[in-house]
Length: 188
Image (cartoon, rainbow, N blue to C red; front, side, top):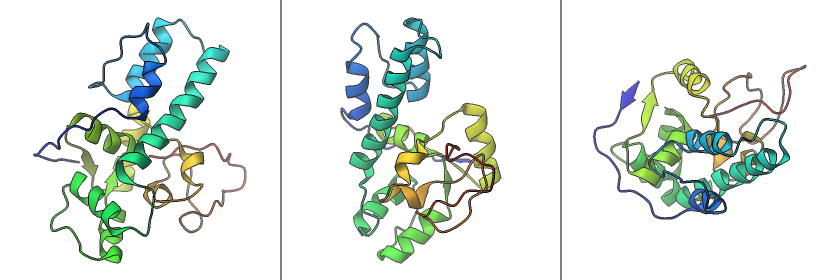
C-alpha cells in the first residue's frame, strides 16, 4: 500500500453534495467518506433495509457517485486530458504525453475508485495498492464499492473498474459473467 505525500486541492460542490442537500434535516459532513455519511444518514432517519425511502436514496446516491466521477474526471476514454487528470490525482510522474501511455500507467495502478473520487472532493491523498489482491481486501473490508452496473455502460469508468468479488472474463467494457454469478457483483 502506498499513501501519497502531497494532497490535492479540494473540489467544490458536486453531485454528491447535491444528493445530500435533498435531505436538509441531515447534517452532512463533506470531509467524511461518502459511504460512511450515507449509512449514517440511514441510521439517523431509522431507514431499515426494507424501507422504500432507503431504497430510493440508495439508487439516487449510486447515480450521484457516477455523475460526480464523470464530472470530476471526464467520461471520454479517448481524451488524453482525462487520463492525465487521473495521473495527477494518482501522483504519477512523469505524466505521459500520449493517450496509450497514460492509459497503460493508470491501468497498472490499483486504486479504489470511491477513494479516488473522495480525494478530489476533500483534497486528501489517495491510497494505491501494489496488487489487485490488496485492493480487493481493502475494498471488501471498507465496503467502498463503486457502482459497477452503471459504469460498464460506457466511457472512461469501464477501463478503471477492477473486479472485487467476481472474476472478470472478457475485455474492458464487455460483460461476461462466470456461470452462476450474478451481474450485481461489486467493483472498486
